[in-house]
Image (cartoon, rainbow, N blue to C red; front, side):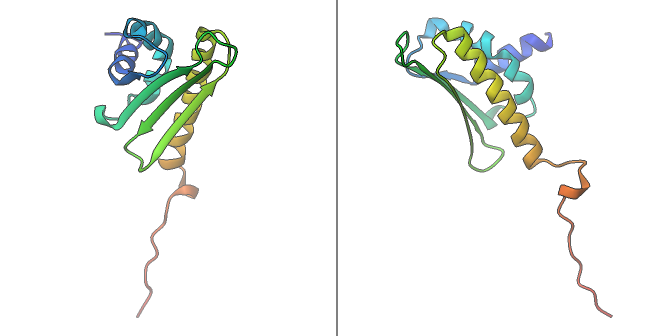
Length: 127
């Protein structure tokens, strides 16, 4: 299975369609969001919940919202929104914003090789 197929299946497994979407659109939406899969691969299956919804679909005030809950980090709830009138454009916008937010959350909470961000334990000095 190629990386693209893995990303697509990961998104399809974790994506819940909210208001404004029908079950028949699931594959199309998952394909649009597949690029997000590479960012979410480092999380275990139960650690990621995705939900997408649209309000006032086909209306002047259409609002698309993508929510991502990362259960590895306590209370981390990421939200990306778009008010683009064209649904494919709005999906691309929320995907890009969510990729940025997930990348930021990972670097903020997992400093790894950045010595300045690591917590250094203090030792009690005594003789």
